[in-house]
Figure (tube, rainbow, N blue to C red):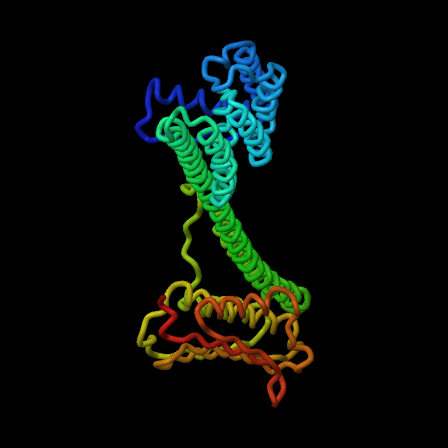
Length: 412
């Protein structure tokens, strides 16, 4: 793949067509560099040999220089151009030696001006200090010719040539600066694209974690409630058909509520946002319904809620955190506390924090929650709002889950 040079916003018509043509030419040269190098080298070699056939005498200071030497110098000044892009300094050194012989013998071949080509590539691709070495290579032939054949003043021979070399070097620096600028734009665009991809991946990972946590809370809790109701209904079917019927009705209600929550959660994954179900997330007002469902499953629960609301209203996210932690704690009690256990849910507001305590009277060993996503999910929820969550056995037996959310962060 090749990259086109970014086009100015106002480029239209012939300008844009020319830019596309230049970009395609560069792309072709990048894929087949030998073709352009061979063409350029052949062209200048032919020109140098044509000049060596006799035209060189028009500018020579000594027309009696042997022809074989002129041909050799012409080849030495043109053939190395094939390697000018890969080894510009070495090519310039070879050409400078030929130029030194040319000016020292009085041939003054015009092919010496081909030194501008490797000089351009030195300015284009080598460190700036390489230009000083280039000056040390191109200056001796000029000085040698001016000293041995002083028929022309230095202003006519040396100074104009040095100015030409300087302009070529400046052109190489300008092209290099533009290439560096373009490469910088491309690199910056790539970095921005990588950063955007990383942000998208991180957001997707966070969303997957959130959905997995919600799925765990919804499915785990409701299945535990349904299991408890099913067990109770099975024991009551012979002795109390009415209680068995109530258990079946409660199972149906709990299943429908679980399905409704799952539809709401999965609705956010659809491409069409209009189709997503927009039922509200559970809040502290839903704690009573949550405890009622757990009671129907066979676990006696005492719910202790404060009479007055908190001094600072809790954000929906903080309320959902409290609700999910209580839900997970009661689910663990249903699963692990054992027969005859009771649970207590206490919600307390202080000026500094919101406290939610869930305790049960089951045996400590039976109350220990599993090591799956439940406990980790509760801690992650608390950490999102700058809170803490602690869980462990009680000295008197049973298990406790204690959530602390700071008031200052709950509404952020």
